[in-house]
Structures are given as structure tokens and as C-alpha cells.
Length: 34
Image: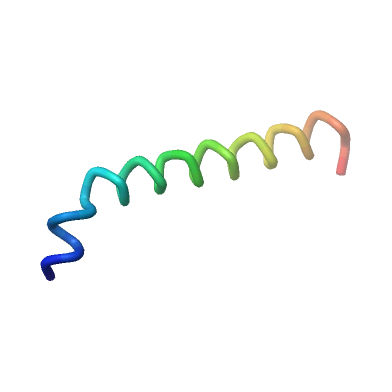
């Protein structure tokens, strides 16, 4: 629990980066035609 509270900011930031990266892959794949 301490890790979750202490690393909340880092966790949310990392999650946001992962989501943006996945969206970038999806959009890129759709644009290329994969």
C-alpha cells in the first residue's frame, strides 16, 4: 500500500505514457493499413 501511495504520481504518469504509446501504434497501424 505504501508503494501505491508513494508512487502514485509516477504510476499515473507512466500509465498515461503507455496509453498514448498504444494509441500512437493503433493510429499508425490504421494509417499504414496494417
